[in-house]
Length: 135
Image (cartoon, rainbow, N blue to C red):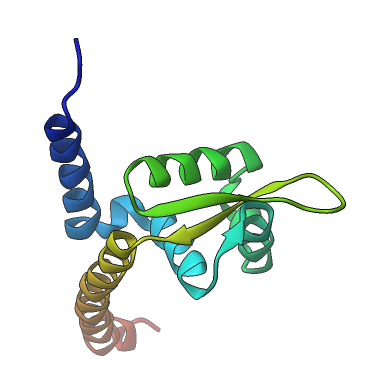
């Protein structure tokens, strides 16, 4: 059976909706979007950035997983890629954030900031009411 563009569009919009409204489910994607938002990068650069931030070791995210996530993000229209031809060494795919990816990054980070404020408030309450009583 042939998938119409409309059916794909519906799935695509639902996926963006999930990421926008539930950023915790896509936090790895948000990290990738943030890195690519700073500047276009190829996969190895992304892995270097993740490694320098302690992310790869902490979460056991392997190279294959990074590329799978990047392909999925591209499929959902969050990023685009082009092949960069190298005079020496292998060609590499360079990823750039799309307009939709930028919008999802912005709205998702806004939601995360609101949730962080709530968590900060709860943490402060804990410190005032419970931590001072331990001792």
